[in-house]
Image 1: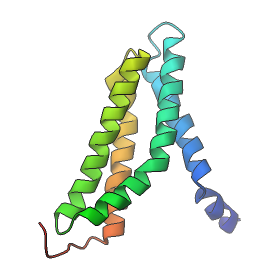
Image 2 (image 1 turned 90 degrees about the vertical axis):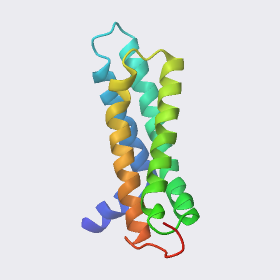
Image 3 (image 1 turned 180 degrees about the horizontal axis):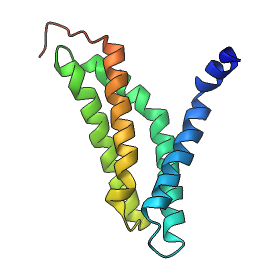
Length: 133
């Protein structure tokens, strides 16, 4: 069973669906005090954004990690990914009329930024190249 579970957990669609449900659910909760359909729209928007960001975050961190060396390689890729994610989340939620933008994006941004930092550290091996810093 652990082999099947591991194989399932490694599939991108599982990650995307989990992000959609978890972060979309959070957005509905964060906007629950506003009249319907605002919370549902915020949930749908955040779910779609989280699903898409989940697909692209890994490859963005990998590409950025190759662009830097030294200590910069450890902090720049996740910071850039975080700023890019925050910008996308804020702009799209503002355009869609999400009432509680900061509450809505707080948890998804924390989760994606943590993932970016941990993943970047893991692919960097915690090592630094000596030519940059």
